Length: 349
Image (cartoon, rainbow, N blue to C red; front, side, top):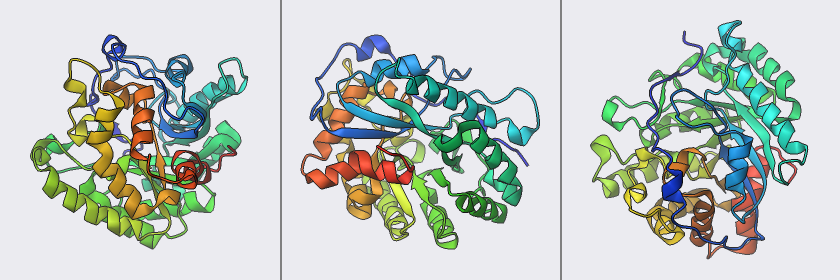
């Protein structure tokens, strides 16, 4: 059994700093507190740019009131040696080091990587427990859970993730056993898949109701390959899968990731980077429908940086989210931008 999910060459949209610099907007609602529950830090061979604390802090200085962030696994800084199952602990050690530097206060007021989500192969079943214990030792209370990417499609043209997991990851009985261990230890599970697999996650949520599950990137509604030009039909399929998941009270959802190539949006193709109005117009149907299905108390906006940086700037991304949520009440905005994330990842913000 493979311990780590195989990664192919990056399918992400390249980041172009000169292009992004051609358009800047002041932050809307700059006093609205935000927890960014999904970003990465890396220096990985298949991604031709480094993104550490310094680079992230440059994006955070966009005028928005980001209070804390959650680091999500991205195959960064695995240990070179040692038992295969333990190599992924290196990423948690790395993220915790970045978090400790941030917590010193020398790099600004944002608590970067205040929560850390690593990768532990739940397909090991109960044997995954020593890996989780090692991650707890590596990051202490900052360690919040694990993500296993299950994004798989039989048509290679529909695969928009750089991960290449086996097709039966979620349906493997050993995975259920591993998830139960994770839940017993008080940690959450992040899931990322394509919309064609949402019913599999719903089955998992029903079979392991004690698990706290966070669905990434609005449920992965595909817009490439066989789904290109079929947005209305695909939207209906995706909405049905999301409605099934929303019926599971142990599932919440992240609102974002839509700057990735797999969603089929073309905002990155313009001569100028998109305005927040343009982003809001493109993303509104998916995000508003997701909020309608899950409610503000089970939905949280995410940046997915630096992946989404190929499509837009950090400041414009949060402006777009604020435009989409403009009709929400003050209490609903607090849940969408801060509180849902803080509760899902047990953060004091």
